[in-house]
Length: 210
Image 1 (cartoon, rainbow, N blue to C red):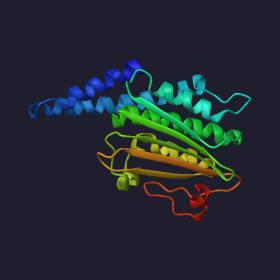
Image 2: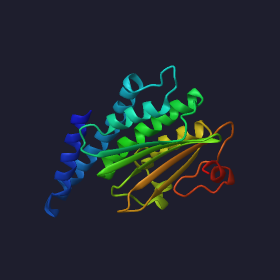
Image 3: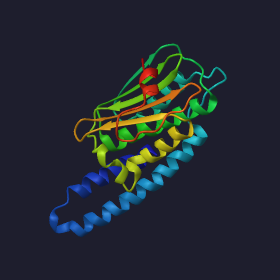
Image 4: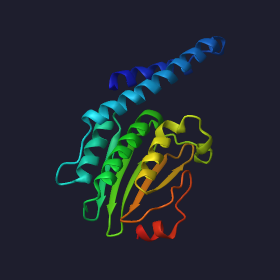
């Protein structure tokens, strides 16, 4: 998977470096790369289902997420800054499993598409909620147009669906040239509305973060 991803990045750079006179060739290359991305995404998901770090009997979510983040950035040269705040409270299995998969997807997307030098992954636990945050210092994108993106912008649609499945709240902040921050908050025993492309607006979410 890492080898194919590297080849794709090299071909992408080659395509974007072609002169205007080879516009037709560039278009064909970019179309093939788009199809290749789709196949790689499906393959990555299948591999993760078989081999990704899973929660052991202790339910150590922070440990599993740290391992998943390290693996997603392996051989990329991108620094990982991982942190945990509060006591690692055991979450419901479905919540913990989906947070793990969300982290895998978000970190892999950052490494592949944002070209960052560093990715920050943090977990915050308190008596009311658990919060997962993934932030990169990469190229960013226009989050205001996210809803109109035909491809869900590099897997964010799948992340949104996972967040909704566990009754969580999703916040996506990004601007071109300013990196991206994805935050997922899950209240214990409660449900949040899901916000995409704008900050949380519910009082429940705000109180959970304090």
